[in-house]
Every structure is written in structure tokens, then in C-alpha cells.
View 1 (cartoon, rainbow, N blue to C red):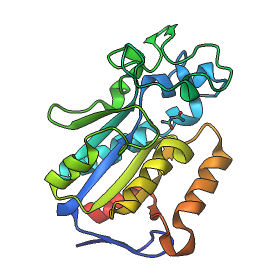
View 2 (view 1 turned 180 degrees about the horizontal axis):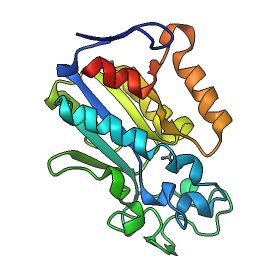
View 3 (view 1 turned 30 degrees about the vertical axis):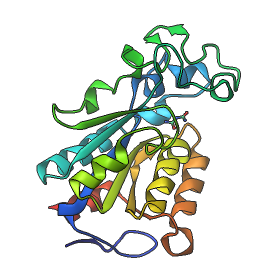
Length: 221
Ligand code: C5J
């Protein structure tokens, strides 16, 4: 068993043999200039700054044999999995499915929907395309984790209060023990990130634990 004594709200214990790392939506459309995030008026620098930390976490997971699962929020080219309630909200300069500088916004197979080169999946790693905020909705994630025998999940990625927190809550409801790597997740709104972290670990880790990436890496070593 591995232990992170400095995790919050209290020490986190996990078995690396039954733990997977899930990296949420580190896609060019969210993280790079010209993508969906920027069309919504956000400063993508907030998200870009975690790339080296996420890379270190992925490297540690790979080194210690933890499965690394990557997700991409994106839709089918015919938009059949994009409800109007999602497409029509907000006032972005480009909507999901529109043509932007990195291809059609958040459409599977387009350059913008792909994962940033710095964190690119290795051959054989699970990459899930998800139409929703949560990675369990309309994907094979439950089956994939059952096949792997996963009991605990370490979370990284963007954005903290949207797709990361939603997926953590889904995972918690499905019986997984969840740990969020605090400095391997980001939001366009630092105050939302801080609030999400507080919510996750409130009431005795009601959704899960949080810890600094260096402490997670240390526990794995
Ligand atoms: C958002 C995400 N924020 N990956 N997506 O629309 O959090």
C-alpha cells in the first residue's frame, strides 16, 4: 500500500496495483489559443501552466505501471450527440461544430479536439471521447475500469469545477476512491478551482481527497 500523509482532509492510502490515473480533457481546444476555451472569452494561460506538472504525474504513473486513461470532450461530426442545450448556451464567437483555426470546434478527429502534444497518450493507453462533462456518461469507462480491476482513481486535467469535478462525483457514486492532484488541475477561474477543491474534500472527503502532485509522485516511488 502507498500513503500520502499530507493529503487533505486526511492521509490517503491506496494500492498502486488497483489505481489508475485519469487525465481529463487536456485538449488543444481548451488549452491553446484559438480553441473553444478562448472563443468563450477565457485566458488559456491559466490552463497551460499545469502542463509540466501533469506531464510529471503521467510519467510517474507510467513508471509505476498505473494505467493512464485520457479523455477528450468532443462530439460526432454530424453533431448527433450534441444536444441544443449544450450547443446554444453562452455567446462564444465560435460554437461547437463551427470551423475554427484548429478545425471544427470540439469535433472528434479534428486537431483542436486532440490532446496537447506535451501530454500525448502512448500507444495502448485508453483514450475516451466523451460528449458530456462526466467521463462515465456515454463512454466505456465503467467497463474499462472493471476490466483493469481499478478501485482508486487519481485525477488531473481541466477544468477543475466542470469536467474534473463532474467525473470525480460520478466515480465516487460508483464506488471508486478518488484523489485529485491539486496542481495538476486548473480552471479559467482560479476562485472556482479553489472552491471545487474545498467542496471535494469537505465533510471528511465527501467526494475525495486532494494532494500536491509531488506528494503523489513521492508516494509512488
Ligand atoms: C468545459 C471541461 N469546461 N473539460 N469542459 O466545458 O471542463
